[in-house]
Image (cartoon, rainbow, N blue to C red; front, side, top):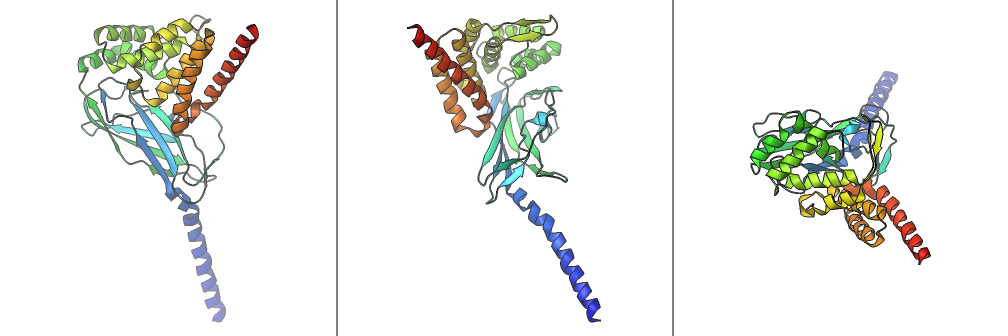
Length: 321
């Protein structure tokens, strides 16, 4: 009888321990917070909308996980509902297939990313004015086994009917789809119909914020070479044209991530035309933003590369003197 009771007790204790192991292992995940935001609460119809995503470890312990906050990696999903409550769907234009290792997220540490959500694989997302609601979901991979899903609080995004006629013109037809792709990619010489649609839009609605995004995308595109696979040729960068387009952009219209890209494109173009002083100013503007926003960390490598280029240019200029 005693042996039976002892065995029963041991089985109960072991079962209790096994039941508590998953809870203890999952406890750090409960301290992860997924947050989404936009830099402004409202946008004109047709204006590109960028979502800032942040993953925060609010607990006292470090967490090892796959820190892939790009929707192209298929761990982060974003769903958007229109003013009528219907899902409008958001799927990025392309997917990534890459190996990644677990990274350490220290206590109180956060990582971030910026996601363009105005245009995806199904086309334009915000096609009518009104109140949209966005929610992000993230699969937390901490090692072998099934991932755990966490979700952000819902975020309201107001789309104003400002420039509504222009938005309908911009989004219409195959030309509108190409225009959306160019604004998302900030590149694409082959998107000729889309570029023509954007040019016509600029003439008709010159004060629209879409125009600033168009000039920014053009400037960024001209600041680097582009390989046109249709022609089997590489179009070289045109630094002067890039600077002309970028100079037309109102900084206060762009989200911080695009402002960084603008400053880096300017710096690249200034370096390409041996204008070290102007390049240094643009790099300083980019660095200030990168250092204050965790979601801009992806630009640090490019910033460092351009800073080294600037050092070489300054050294060469001094030697010539």
